[in-house]
Length: 126
Image (cartoon, rainbow, N blue to C red; front, side, top):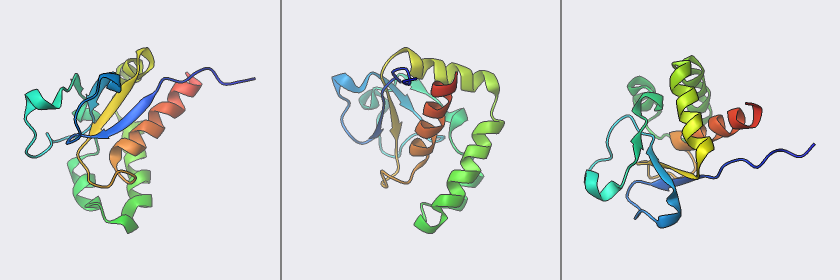
């Protein structure tokens, strides 16, 4: 049986200009991106409670060799997160196209990538 159409989740650095096709812009960082004015960011919702814990973020430090373990630990944090917060967040992602806005320089190994994969896996099963 073919899978139902999954909503589009785009990833974008906070320092990139917003675009009309971004859809709902969700900041998925615990801290506001350094040097970014709030009015210039065009953020519709700040999901800081679903971002990696400060301890995990500091431990990872964007050291590439720590990526697999960071991913595992962050997924465990998401699994332990408040279920209602997860449901609401997934609901936002299901309702329309969204862009997860993140601050990291590394566009392939960051928490937004993990969160996108987590959400898509749950959208597919719920």
